[in-house]
Length: 94
Image (cartoon, rainbow, N blue to C red; front, side, top):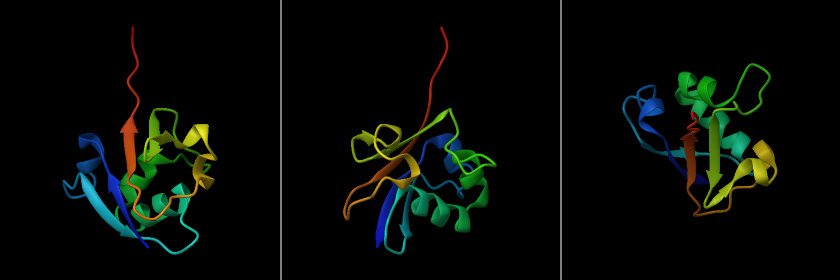
């Protein structure tokens, strides 16, 4: 299945400047398999989304459509056909 992925500018710099990517992912399609597909083409992007243990980094949010994946099943969250995955950097401060 082809999954549409949107990246923030900070990650696009590690994906040849692309802010929108279409990645081919084998079923079952999960956030984790989408990140793995991104990593196979753009390893630096994958390293900035997941840490050495394979967990989502604290400062990165991944949305499946309008739902943040941590509020669902994390990296095991299913990605339905036709839904865009958005990778967004967290903003913090005071």
